[in-house]
Structures are given as C-alpha cells and as structure tokens.
Length: 171
Image 1 (tube, rainbow, N blue to C red):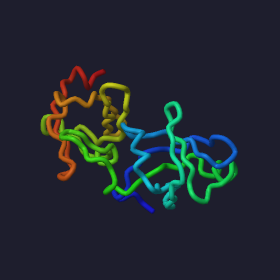
Image 2 (tube, rainbow, N blue to C red):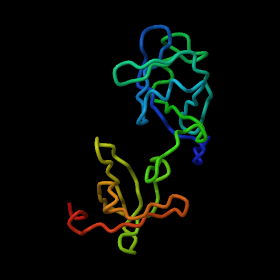
Image 3 (cartoon, rainbow, N blue to C red):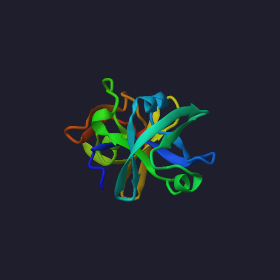
Image 4 (cartoon, one colour):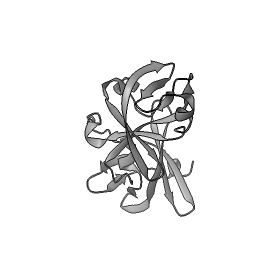
C-alpha cells in the first residue's frame, strides 16, 4: 500500500523487549504519550500495510513498548523489526498555525526570491529548530526551518516561498 498522504508515520520498530512479543518502538512524534490514545496501528513494510490492535502500551526510557494482538512471542516480534508504525491521517493530532507534518513537506518545491532553489528532500530534527534539506541535482542546501527564511509554506498549493540569504546557502 502506498502512503498517498493517508497515513502519518508516528514510529519505527527498533527491536523487541523481553520474550512475550513486546515491541520497542522509536516514537517519531513530538508527544510519545499519544500512543496511549490509540486502539490500533498500521505497520508498514515496503508497500504493504497491516492493521494491528494494541493490547498494551507503555513508555520506557525514550521509547514506546507495545503489545500487539497476534504478536505473542519474541520470534513474532523480531519479524516486525524495521517496520514503520502509522495511523490514519484523520487520527493525527491537530497542528497549530505554522506547524506541518514532515510527510507533507517532502518533495515540495522551494522558490528562493522567485527562483526554484530545489525540493525538500529531508527534514532533520536537531532539537530546537528543524533543518530543511533542499536538493536540486547535485546541489544540496541545509537551511534552518525559520520563518525568517521560509516566508510562506503552502502545503495545499504545493509550494514553499523563501528568502534565504546567500551566506546561509553557502554554508
């Protein structure tokens, strides 16, 4: 199944915890506690998506531990390592103004002072300020995701307008 913007990825299965099939999930959301509100998740591998009911959820250190229905031992759990954990987009948290889902930003064209600079190919989350990776051919720019540089992000129109000084692009 292809994403088609219908799913939001909220985690990635890193490993197993114990011998009873508990999965260790790296949360890819600002609020790992949001897993408590879910009844089921969708595990994505290649182009396949499979629904799983959540039997139990708990936070452990910086990860989320999940027991999923049908995953009852370590071998079952190990077979799921590396899969992404998604939810239907309609279950995603409501975003504040000037907040965006990373999936919605990827591949958007960035126009710097009216000229095509490239497309968003990655969003690095490095603590306080995200960094947008913008690529065009072999040229790659890494720019802090600040309103100062990105004057308008319009996901619906499929366009980002920016005014990034040359000094930042030369870094």
